[in-house]
Amino acid sequence: MSSRTLIIAANWKMNKGPQETSDFLNAFIPKLDGFTGSADIVIAPPFISIPTAVGTLGGHSSVAVSAQNVSDKDNGAFTGEVSTDMLKELHVEYVILGHSERRSIYDETDAIINAKVKKTIAAGLKPIFCIGETLEEREGGKLESVLRTQITEGLKDVSDADLANVVIAYEPVWAIGTGVTATAEQAQDTHKFVRSVIADLYNTTAAEAIRIQYGGSVKPANAAELLGQPDIDGALVGGAALDPDSFFGILENSAQ
Ligand SMILES: O=C[C@H](O)COP(=O)(O)O
Image 1 (cartoon, rainbow, N blue to C red):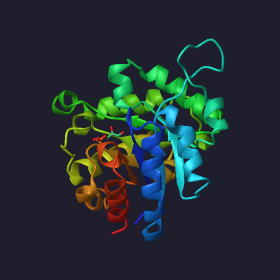
Image 2: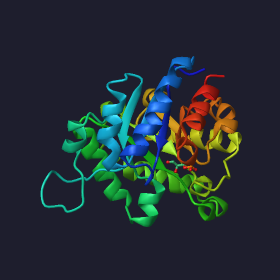
Image 3: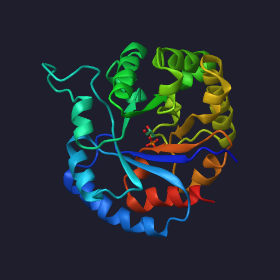
Image 4: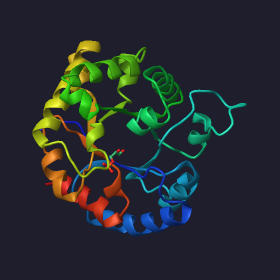
């Protein structure tokens, strides 16, 4: 059993405006009274719903708010962007960066992701830094080289001290939103590999300390097995985090 605290995050993607955000949290928060486990719980709504999430939580200390993206620029003439200053003003704590949807649909490169990771850390926010391979890459024997490159480039110039505020989310692209989950063995093997890359780039202390979430069709039925693996320190949940019962079910099963 590791000493790392589980971190279970809901990535709502482009779902839930302010009203649905409020409805979800008003249903979800009371359930936490019955949560007997121990985990950092994070909700990542769309930007426009962050003020509602923060207001509805009302400082509920066991749930943190995350953004799903941020600009790598300071405030200024960047139409359509949101800055780290703006997120800080709303008491946002985490920012999801490098999600495969940002990489593949919006052409975010490792260099762009690295700039955002550094900007996020400099602002005192915590990146949830996503990595993952496509099915083609896995089947072509490129799993390890793809992940090593994403980690090396994405965390370039991130110091040992700053790494303490980074969470890695391993999300095999082929498992996202498909209902196909990596087996617990596949996920564990890959998480162990990711930890070894951190040991290579930093040191074994940093590798043992960093939290690595699994993402890709996590649901209540598979949460216990996945989260029971020694190198899996949490989950980044998409579809199954849209419903309060289902998201709470993942939390409950993480405690077993
Ligand atoms: O960020 C979350 C992941 O993309 C997983 O999404 P999913 O749980 O719908 O497969």
